[in-house]
Image (cartoon, rainbow, N blue to C red; front, side, top):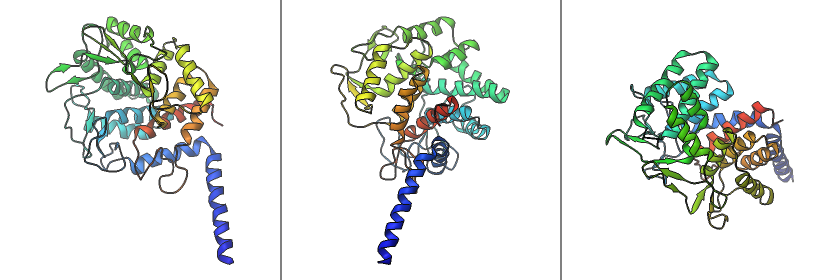
Length: 363
């Protein structure tokens, strides 16, 4: 009898903990997510691991286990800026200067767990995100060295990323080759404007890249995937990646030219289904996968905020937090399955939540 009562009381306590954890809201959530990243997804040298578990096999993005990405570093730096946490930013800046950045401004897109570079390429989108964070940090904390580092990176991009009209996806140092493709979701207008203001991107290149974004022609309601620099041929994927789509829409919205057709599609999906799938058919607009992504909802939050659509932002937020661990070992972590998760699915929600809090949209 006593054993039954004890079990019942334990169940009640557990239920109450789960309930109040959800109720406490954004402040507790961000604290736990940040702690989760620091505890489970940070290597001994301070670089951010892509997965919790170590692994020998490469994933679909050519990354394995505890390898560290410049993408993760850029998102972490932006989060530190938005949060106003100089301590986190200083640590991230140290990691950038020590492991990722060369003297001439090249950023390795991937490192081993120990901080060694086994690749010879960088990535435009990650470089842009990092320079944006550095310029903002310089202004926020009046640290001249952050701006000087951003300029060093910007000078390198100006010298090596450029084709005749646009900057493209990456530069290969070993073969001294610049990619001939620009992915639309890489056109980060906020970062490009900062580079333009510091005269680190030719005015003609800036104009061409922003024009590509604002004049992007939708096909059946979806944005193009990429454009070939040599032929100006625009490509569309038959299976549409929604993170790419939301990023293009977000940058369009920042430029003041959001597509009502795309916005209506996303809003309808969230209203009728309560979710947004990871991929859709270009032809039928039906989902082609069953999975969702916390990172996708994070970017959807940023897009909705740019549109000043609080309803959509909170719909995305509540669905995003359904993927967050609220109890026990991995508390605060997103999309943890079998003791593993991808850091992208944790950093983007963390950043999105911070911006929601700053906007006063979370109680």
